[in-house]
Length: 179
Image (tube, rainbow, N blue to C red; front, side, top):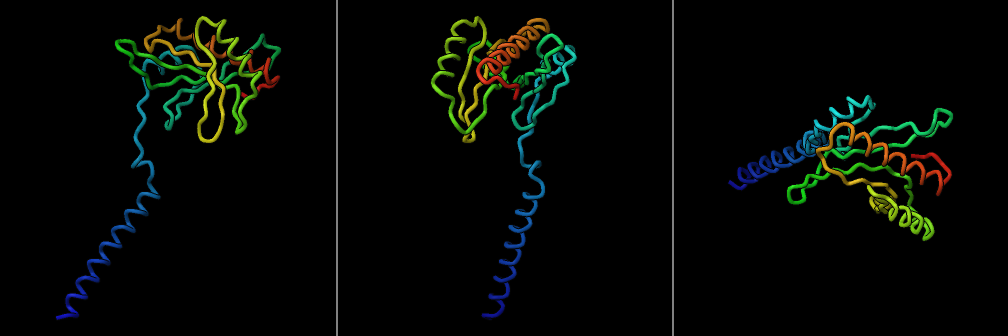
């Protein structure tokens, strides 16, 4: 009798361990199956297409990203712009963020750079500078938080404002064209 129970227990353990191993391998080989599928806002996609912007969709962050050529043709500068697909609701207002990065480092920016950004923000009518700390890195972004229901021309204006503000500050403070 003792051997029969032992054999059954061993078989159950084997089935249990095999099931756990199978599940573990399945998760490792198929992470997409368990990832949440990002929903993109068709309103933005249509506008970006109408503006002839060559955008990419980031399935992890849900952002649309593209480059804007800066300057008068002699300059080879570009500025990367991000448009968040996700929106935030505040009462009846639906808000979307459009931003551009000018700094990314494990080292925080110095006090003079922060002062320059704050002074520049105080002169802006739309958008402002933000210092973020994510994944052990510091980021400086110019961010415009706008209505998610802008028409094509207004969206184009905000995109250009964000790109121009970021590019000018990147050039002034860092004398580079990294972003």
